[in-house]
Image 1: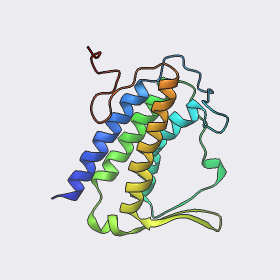
Image 2 (image 1 turned 45 degrees about the vertical axis):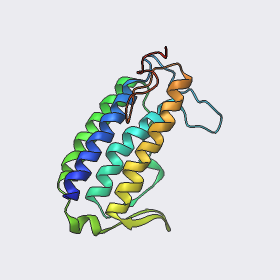
Image 3 (image 1 turned 120 degrees about the horizontal axis):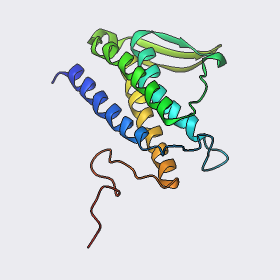
Length: 169
């Protein structure tokens, strides 16, 4: 098995599903809306999903360390068009970096630090699996719940969704 080929194919599938969900955000949705006081706002969550697919991926693939500071927090998007444009650009930036990976690069270490705190210290492969792919899928699922609560029809991710199934007879 060519693991590199499989990782690229998996990324393509997951970002394809993610884009379908981002497209399902209702036009004119209130990006400040939250389902609960402890929840992220819709715009912040949608922006985070887009960032995970792109910025997180690029940082993981092209650097050995990310030193976080509060100025790195981007402003949440305010429209579906902005989310989709950001997502498409970020995925386009991440894809060549993913295709350029080698086994030695996957085995190298990656750290995420904030000041003197280390938040992530793992192989690039471990970070890719947990903090790019799994993290994106996790927040994509959260976004699906938000969209369901807003009355949007959900696209299927791993087969048809309830909205895509014919009515039971």
